[in-house]
Amino acid sequence: MSEDRSLNFIEEIIEEDIKSGKHGGNVITRFPPEPNGYLHIGHAKSICLNFGLAQRYGGKTNLRFDDTNPETEETEYVESIKYDVQWLGFEWAEELYTSDYFDKLYSFAVKLIEKGLAYVDDSTSEEIAGQKGTPTEPGVPSRYRDRSVEENLRLFSDMKAGVYRDGEKVLRAKIDLASPNMHMRDPIIYRIKHAHHHRTGDNWCIYPMYDFAHGQSDAIEKITHSVCTLEFIPHRPLYDWFIEQLEIYPSKQYEFARLNMTYTVMSKRKLLQLVNDGYVTGWDDPRMLTISGLRRRGYTAASIREFCERIGVAKRENIIDVSLLEFCVREDLNKRAWRRMAVLDPIRLVLTNYPEDQVEIFQGENNPEEENGGGSREIPFSRELWIEREDFMENPSRKFFRLGVGLMVRLKNAYIIKCDDFRKDEAGNITEVHCTVVWGTRSGEDNSGLSVKGTIHWVSVPHAKTAEVRLYDRLFRVEDPGSGEGDFKEYVNTESLQVIPGAYIEQDMATAEVGKGYQFIRKGYFTLDKESTPEKLVFNRTVTLRDAWAKEMKK
RNA sequence: UGCCCGAUAGUAUAAAGGUAGUACAACUGAUUUUGGUUCAGUUUGUCUAGGUUCGAAUCCUGGUCGGGCAACCA
Image (cartoon, rainbow, N blue to C red; front, side, top):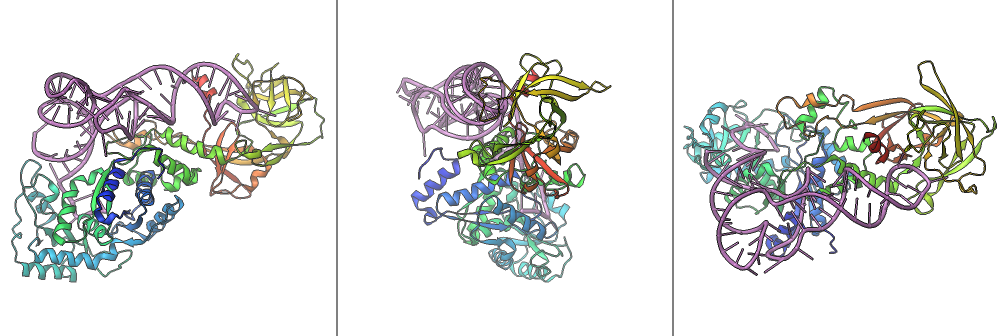
């Protein structure tokens, strides 16, 4: 395998395992989302890791929905998760559900009871919490801890049969109440929930807990490397204990640090609050770092995969600079996006020496990064053009390479022009800029010998189409909104969305497609929003271009 | 202060006892019909104190700092 990067710690483990013949040299991973919310960029890291590992080592990856809590899980989420994983570019070997294993998990529990390693406990939730002890003091046994195997078997069977109400009884593993690891202090493994399950309906009224489902499901599927996030480290002894006691396939768990990003929050719970409290318009709001939000914003699957590759995999807590994500999408879109011109904040430019009714058609490359410019499109040109307000200055500084009286610029794909005059309204706003075309400077046919420092974009007034353009900024004003005391929502950036109702764009943008990225020259990358209609075009700004001038201005 | 995990430039991530490297960010400059792209370059780092060793980011010990763990959530 040709290699241009070093291995991450999980790849090192796998290569050692393959060498030593562990698991027969197989590599089988799984991506195990709970269908109770939408996937976000943090899940993308896990998806790329799990599927990437299997691809790299000739194995396979299952998609397994961890659906052991019927109260929060819904089919709607299952569908969105499947769509997102596929959109990211991955194919799972099998689509599975932990609920597929409910019968098997039940028999595992019976086996544990038979071995004297589990018991039915009638204590209340509060009593059980009290019996757990604290990290520095051991727990105390429940008075039901020493029930006979026969009684436990009968009670557990009754639990399954629906004899008891929610919370009346639980099944607990009998392990070690004095363990320094709280998870080993007789953890609850089955609870009663008379709830409708999105797949098994009303077949069950008892449901296994995560710890009694995940490792066993891994074992059933012969998962060799069960990769999860750091917070499950303390669960690992339990994971191993169940596998050992049940004498099932020895899957192994490995933990990596979850992804955090600057200027956002990453937990499903917090994302849900942003949706429910109306800070964003939904899970796929383009400001959300959900997969669906990023997709709507114009991020490509390739750029997200590249991002996940670049951030690496390790065990140390991290917070990735969002500028790396932006770099990845610019890098990808630069190669693929068609160039078009759009004027977001227009003022009128009049070419006073250009004939009133004349129209010329210029050619513009679709993408200068591609061979032959990626083909070209026709751009109509006339006496009156829309240009960007910020491309004219009444009193230009020496470093301003655009328009000001006496200055020359090139109109992209067209002529060099010289600025002669401008008009203002009573309020002092510039309303019109007057220029003259410098003849003999037509793009591709310029024999004038002139060279100008600036090139600006434009759209012909009579030919322009109108569009709504939505400009997005980071959703939070601070780098780490989730870290401090208090409510993270206080740090929401209230100016994260700026709507421009009437931008002018090239006429052929009417044929823009959802899912395709465009570069509005000098302004950034944009994509058609799903709310766009032929009558009202709507574009989202994916990301701005790098902007050396904006940096200069800040100085 | 019980147990567990971690600590390398601003942010991430390499270096498996032998020159601390790469990317993003920042800053210079060159090129450019996008102040984009591309190219060249610069700045910035091994938490701390001991120990082992010819030699320590790496091994050992103590400390410091950060994170996790006491849901009938996953």
